[in-house]
Structure formats: structure tokens, C-alpha cells
Image (cartoon, rainbow, N blue to C red; front, side, top):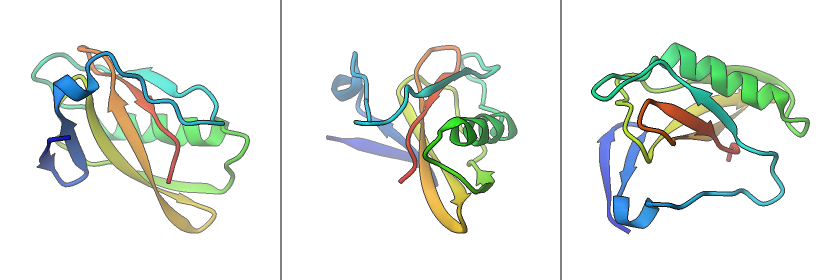
Length: 113
């Protein structure tokens, strides 16, 4: 798979690989989907994304002790782009993938790793 790094914490995967694909993490609840206020050429608001990621993690009954979430700024609202946020869960740092799923900046919050 060919990937282009756009900025630290941001990965754009080749569209031929991801077109029509859905990523499902086995045993996880349905991914959290948000519609950020974005349009083509607009950047995602990192504070909105951080709040959505925090809310998704807190709603997961298997996760406790979420004390902080940080997401990269300057991320364009491009469908299939995945950015990686950092979350502090029970005192440890985890990475949380956030994949933009719609042309207007909607995204899915994935399972932390």
C-alpha cells in the first residue's frame, strides 16, 4: 500500500486501496461518527475533534480513566484521510485513529491502540 504523509500524525492512504472499504475492529462497539463543520479546502477544528474523541472514549464501557486527548491541527477535511490523536487512558498514552468518512468532514473515531 502506498501512503503519503501530509503532516505529523496525518496519513493519506491511496484511494484505490481504501475506496469502498470499511474498517471494523473485532469486538468493538460501533465507531463513533461525527460531522465536523468542514467543507472542501477547510481544515478540521482540532478542539472539536478532541472533544468528539474524548466523548467516544468515555462512552466505551471497556475504557475508563480518560484524562486527556490531543489531536493534530492543520488537518484538511479530505475523505479517507486518517489522523491520529493521542489520548491519556488510565495514565498511559494511547493512539486513537480518526478517519474522515465523508466529503463534508464527517469522521469515525476508531479504537485506541
